[in-house]
Amino acid sequence: MKSLRAISFLVAVFASASAAFAAGSTGNAFYGDPPDDRHPWAIHDQNRPQPKVVAPLPVSELEQKARPPADAVVLFDGTEAALAKWVSDKNPNEPTKWIVRDGAMECVPKSGYVRTKEEFGDCQLHVEWAAPGKVEGDGQGRGNSGIFILGVEIQVLDSYNNPTYADGMACSMYGVNPPLANALRPPGEFQYVDITFHKPVYKDGQCVDPGWVTVFCNGVLVQDRAQLEGPTGHRARTKPGPLPEKGPLRLQDHGNPVRFRNIWYRPLSLKTWPLPAQRPLSAKATAAKRKELAASIRNDAARKGDNAVEQMLRFAESLVYEKDDATFKKVEQMACAYAASVKELPADKLAPKKDEVKKVGDAFKYLAKWNIVPADFAPKTDIEKLIKAQGWDKKK
Ligand code: MG
Image (cartoon, rainbow, N blue to C red; front, side, top):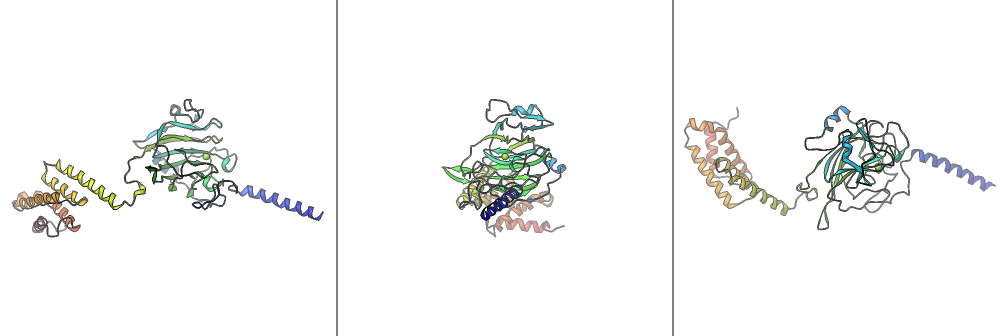
């Protein structure tokens, strides 16, 4: 009898404990893939710290920056017609069942994800979203949707006074990286989200750049060049790997009527150089790039035959990137001729050339300072003497 009473007491203790746990919980233990040698936390780990709450910027300030720049591709502008740019994600030949209401595209629960017809990769993306004003559900069940770029989900969730596991909060890279801060507005209000996305770069099967995502939520930095780990997933650890070159933007149907408006992107160049992972550059890569720049500047100089001074300065400029005997001799010859010609000018002809002479003088001073021409480079000395004699070196 005694032991039975003890057991029923313990049952009562556990029952009340689990109720308390559920109320204050941010997730379940024994749920996602466990910690491993590169991740101290499990996926969706309840022990991962919650981001601090930071007040969002005022809407008046955010609206200025929310306008699509001139080269942006607008994916949704609030009109019914813009819905034609979106299709059902499951059946891309079919229109989406999501609806437009009050200038926003609204998820119709159970109708499935939507995707754009437009496909893109690296981008700057602007999205505004609002969780339902009528608060229902909690944790992952409240105002859940998602912004998917090449399979990477930037979480959409009503995280306003709604704890959940940190890597599943609004603006988390889902299951990978929690946001740095919780800058959400209350449900029903629009959140202004700005994302830059760089997919991984692989060359000959080797990763040369892991890919990055940066996110601002309501003007607050919440993902700071967070490293990608492949497409995001639920409960299962994702693996880094190549992503498609391009793909549609996808928005999630997680069963909540989340609303979206003002969606646009700007493609980011695939040829951005150097790749982030190459910084700092190797000496070999740097030398190669400097050689390339020098050649391009010399080509440009060669085209300036109608302006001898500009041509001389441009050839001289190329020496900053690459030392080259032939170019140096050419510059020296031109500079000697220039110095001789200005020295012979009568005062009235010299005066209008003040800015030009000073510009040439400054250029040679710079080149000598960096040992690109010798300190005793004769034309430099001649021009300096001339500038001094004219009193052009004095500050007014
Ligand atoms: Mg989601």
